[in-house]
Image 1 (cartoon, one colour):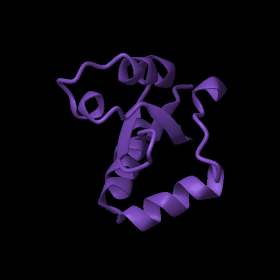
Image 2: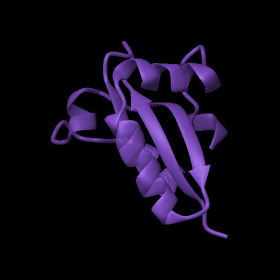
Image 3: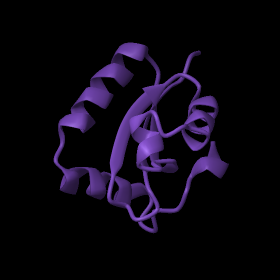
Image 4: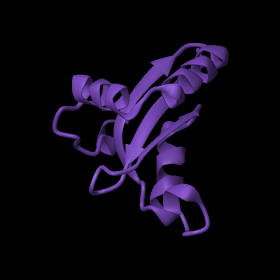
Length: 94
């Protein structure tokens, strides 16, 4: 069974929220953490994994990513707080 991930990253001050999706979460988070300043996440040091969820099908992950991206900041914060109220880096749990 394939697993697809939808995730939210932030920077150390929690001022930027980035929503993404991937099939290989460990690899993708590693890429974000080693990013150059040429990308959005690199430019704003967005490399702290504060939320992730799994889906069984790629179409569901695409739909969910698009849904969360459209949400306002408060809704995204509430989603994060529901799973990770201390906003700890969840990288060690993947």
